[in-house]
Amino acid sequence: MIDAVVRTGTGLVRGAAGDGVVSFKGIPFAAAPQGPLRFRAPVPPAGWDGVRDAVAFGAAPPQSPPAPGVPAIWRPGDGLDCLTVNVWSPDPGAAGLPVMVWIHGGAWKIGSSGMPQFDGATLARSGVVVVTFNYRVGFEGFGRLPGAPDNRGLRDQIAALEWVQGNVSAFGGDPGNVTVFGQSAGAASAVLLLAAPGAGGLFRRVIAQSVPAGYQSPAEADRATAALAGAAGVAATWEELSALPPEAILAVQDAPLTGPRAGGGAFGPVIDGDLVTGPPWEAARAGRDTDLICGFTHEEYRGFGPVADPATVDLAAVAEAFGLGPEAAGAYRAAYPGSADGEIFVTMMSDALGRMPTTRVAEAHAGAGGRTWLYDFAWRGPALGAAHGIDVPFVFGDGDSRFAARFLGSPPPAGFAALSGEIRTAWTSFAATGDPGWPRFDPGHRRTRIWDTVPSDAVYPLEGSRRVWERVMPR
Image (cartoon, rainbow, N blue to C red; front, side):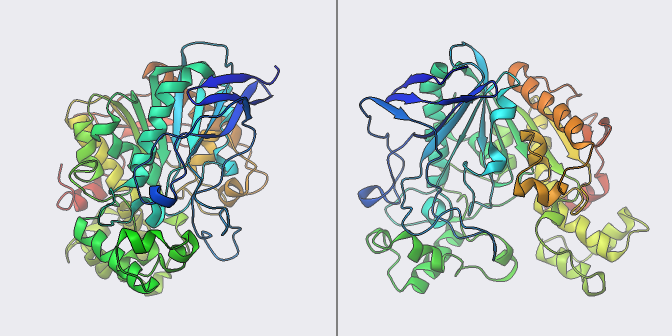
């Protein structure tokens, strides 16, 4: 296979061929959100003459390093020209290939499509066109600001999907058969787009891996903006905040974080009554005409940091923080007899961070008549168990990146390759035909795929947790 040149709506791009796939990287899908476009909705990019080499990822969106000692993927001077897409195609000369569009996670605060764990080549070799893209994160993408549109990061996602509709056929893909898939914040974004008026007709199916409940009311978002502006020493206006370089905003972006929110980001989707009208499960109900796979990892909380010392765990306080009521700690102990409080703490936190929001999404979608599939990723890695994020290397066939090694060790366990192949087959089969190969989830039978060394199908496995949470997330 030789390098390929493809004509997009804004100009010719040249990709690089290798190992049965042609990749195209760093193609603009929107103009740089800087100057008068700062904190504005995305607008189409300018075109170019000649052939543009598309062989390197574009700049990441502005963000701080995810943790001390972790290399930064954005640095001062990288600027704001970050709205680019990447495409992996098994055959740009083909026609009608299924299309899979990835939305990365990162608490709507960090992440980039150029991170090694999101390389789409292995998936593309299964016969699909894979697209990844950047969107604005943190305050740049989700800060509420007078005179600026809310949920700019979600609007970037819609603009990327519009680019796919207009251009993916030139890469061999079928714009009428697009599956959006994402993890964590990317999963919640994909589910929210089910009901977003601007996203109608842009995709046919969704795969949502570990859906969080994160969303904000306008009042919460306004308070976060006021706190950030105060820490920066400017007024909470477009004029003053847009005059600050992105690194100045990043320096104070965590200023609004207090109390139980301190472990996540201060900015995320805002219920604006337009693009976002409610939590993800309400969007899932409205999006019942779109096929949906959703699922969680069995020990979500283990991916978020050190597990609390069992001797210091106060289950009643944890239950109170999530609005579960004073009897919830006892209900959890009754639902999981024989488990120590430390284990129950991990269960409660895993439920709150992903398992129950994802379950609620499945119930809402299936209850509204949607075609729904649910899974529980139970395979335990050697270091963190079945932690939040462990499913990502399996989906992309990535056993070698630094991200993968955190979950799998290095080299990965012997069973990784086989289970990864089965999951990729399920994901790409769903994208191609609408059938991932296991029974659908419905309110009556509640069948759930258990992804483990030997995959199996079972009745929904978290009924004890669901009963505790149904007052907070009623069916």
